[in-house]
Amino acid sequence: MKIADFVCAKAILPRLESVKRDDAIKELITALDKAGKLGKDNFADVAKAVIKRENEASTGIGKGVAVPHIKHKAVKKVVAAIGVSATGIDFSSLDKQPVYTIILLISPSEGDQHLQAMEAIFDHLQNDNFRKFLRQSTTAEQIKELLIEADQNPSW
Amino acid sequence: MPDSVCKIDVEIKNRNGLHMRPAMLLVDIASRFTSDIKISNEQTSADAKSIMQVTMLAAAAGTKLTVTAKGHDCNLAVEAIKELIEVRMFDEEGRQETVQAG
Image (cartoon, rainbow over all chains, first blue to last red):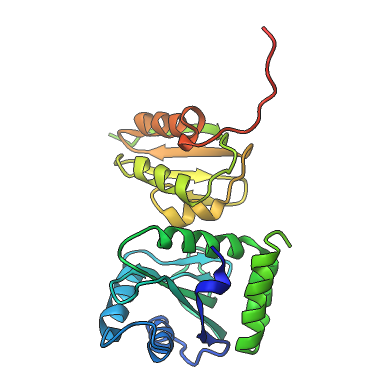
């Protein structure tokens, strides 16, 4: 699965305004909602579900990234939002460091897409260059190009 | 009674390594035990009951990891995990091994 295929271009936020975890999560979900990806009237439920999942176990996997994710009936196809924070956000990460890049994933309740999308995200996040360039990006366009590049060259 | 600690070394043998699907199998097995279980490489220690942490180890075929379990059932835990990784190889294809003579 290619990450560029499921990241919503209108939900790429290179300058997150939020400085707190739940606000950042809501900011990204709002972007997906505005882009029409969450169907009708699902914002509150999706936000509640993502935050609940985050409270169960932090998705701050270290190295400045977090990958909040849920399965939800609001979506028929897997969709993701990406946010970059200049100031860093506390996600109670494993390495106790702030998070600068958030990749939020919403998958359909049924099917295998969730696993494939998570694998694609994790594969790219292993790459030091990917994380670095993502964090350094200043426009949504740059991030979009980075995703396409990363899909084409998985081992750069 | 103090908790027992059990520790073994394992080697990743399936061709595609410890990607997300094997990580899920590992977490499934680890979660059956009450022991606190960690699986570690030289730099990082992952909670064996967390899919994300285990996946982040990104252990390729050939990687050696250490499994440490702490609790009453630590022996059973490390044995079960070793079996999954080295015998079942996560129910996936092993690496190409050179054929041993005899």
